Length: 270
Image 1 (cartoon, rainbow, N blue to C red):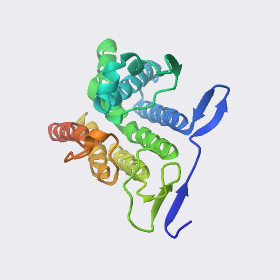
Image 2 (image 1 turned 180 degrees about the horizontal axis):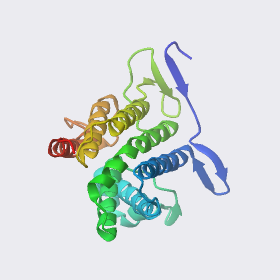
Image 3 (image 1 turned 30 degrees about the horizontal axis):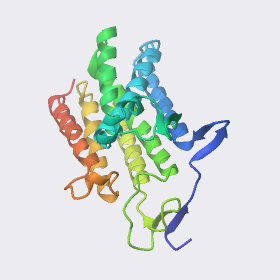
Image 4 (image 1 turned 90 degrees about the vertical axis):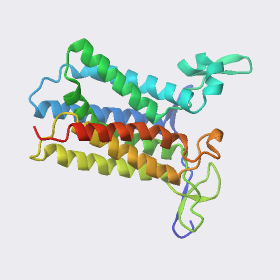
């Protein structure tokens, strides 16, 4: 190992269960969702509310994450291919040598997942007559932890790589090349963890903002971090070459604007 560099060559598959490969990414994705559920449940308990509705809420959110993240990747990053192969957009299959084979989903986009969660929560609140903003504030508390786990999963997959550092420090993803690179996945994971700690302190503070302020703050902080860290990443798709900003940055801007608008409108104390 060179001074200041880490060589990374972990097999993305944790264990092979027959024909089904259990990947670190899948395990960390599930762990992130489970931790998010635990956080929301504790917030419900502290507020003296019944946790009985949480199972149905979790179902809505999980479906929203998966559908939103999948459609987000297909439509934001590879629209030309997937609009010509719509069945592969919906099902985890791919046409190889004339026949469809199970290949698992090869792309998920966090921005699409965020949109999917928002739509799922709105549908849940409408169906079960639940106030939107207090619920979104609780989910906003959990979102950074889920995001951090997913980014660690990307690190285990040696994907979403950072730019070469151009020096004698960084992570060498040996499954890709021999260049020391910025561990952009870990930059995001640590940023999201910091945001979670900050939100937790604010949520427990004596200052009680209107419902919706926490949601706005989370969106502003998380997607600003995402916007800035994107500068350390290589482009994910070819069409980003020559663009002023990459797709992840353009997609982050509406979330940042929404977050700032929410913070402004919900800034007063209760």
